[in-house]
Image 1: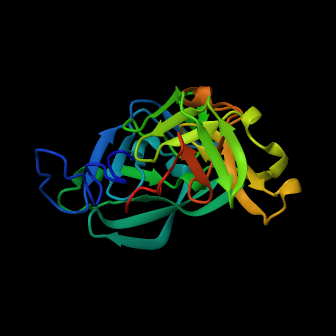
Image 2: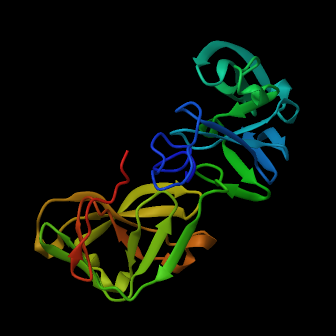
Length: 275
């Protein structure tokens, strides 16, 4: 994310605060080896197993794993009639995966004759993340997508006072928050559950997976005795976070766009990065 999204150097709007100029097309490609073994399973069968994978960093997109053709189980693939054209990479050919009693149409693609400037794509194939039942980075199953080596998460204890209000109703107030900084994203303030009006919230069935923080559980504002309308999934927490976010375990973070969050008495402004 740090390279291709927000204001990363390979994004559509790189920062002006540099003493160099990036020449070349506005849409940029960067091919970089992935340093660990990766496996993907469909229907319980291994479709790819590689130590030679590369991440393709592409302007405006999350990095995509490409692996040598020899590391894909060709006997599980069937050629497809589907083709697509990318002006930056060339014409893509597709294959469907037949594995473990499952058929996943157009799950694998490649650029047999990539355009000039992307020749290194020749001899590599890619698998849609959603096409596989499970992905493994070495022996650890990963969710969401592979971790970008240029992306990081830092969590720090803070002495700031954080106050959260929803339509004027105080929902949380603490002087012992943690501040989570994540590459390419706005800072997020996490509040201990003891300092949250949990009587105003109801646990949601919504779950999302982050490869850097873990599985997020969501909370909706239901008002309790304070009344008011329901605001779905207005807060989230990581009950069992990954190692980078352990300091935020069980703490709640509120959607800064849908609540008023005050830090040391000052309301936070818009938090979404500029497009």
